[in-house]
Image (tube, rainbow, N blue to C red):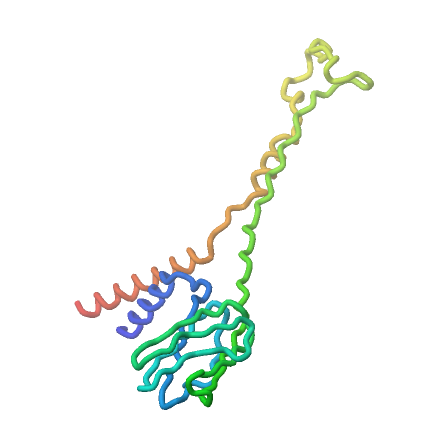
Length: 205
């Protein structure tokens, strides 16, 4: 029963977690150590930042040899670092101008496309019932028919059309209530959790 309680608690915690949004920009590091760049080949995305960390006693720098956008860092002493944020995709080949044998590259991929939000479903408006029309004699307009034309023997109930109440009922039934599936799932999980807690309490007692 303890395992069941733990599983239910995990489900409740999962339901309370917010959905993951778009991925944030990352930060990568390149070590300048033993007269080499490590890693010598790095892949990032547009918006990511690369930081070069200097660990050698001799000074080093970062200078592009071929790149969509050229950049050049100052000479870094031991313990210093320099960062660059890539804004354009492409391959950035670079080296150390102090030690030309130190060469590396950074491949920048385009930023992942974010999915467009889905439009909210629209509920069709209920059709308004047609106005009741007073029955008139053939060939005469409804507005011109006098009230005295109805015979005294005709019951008043026959003057109102019998189809008016069904039209109102159809208009109301056209918009059924909608329920959120997440609320149903949350209610179901909460009920299971309460049931497990009651079973544990009764077992301990």
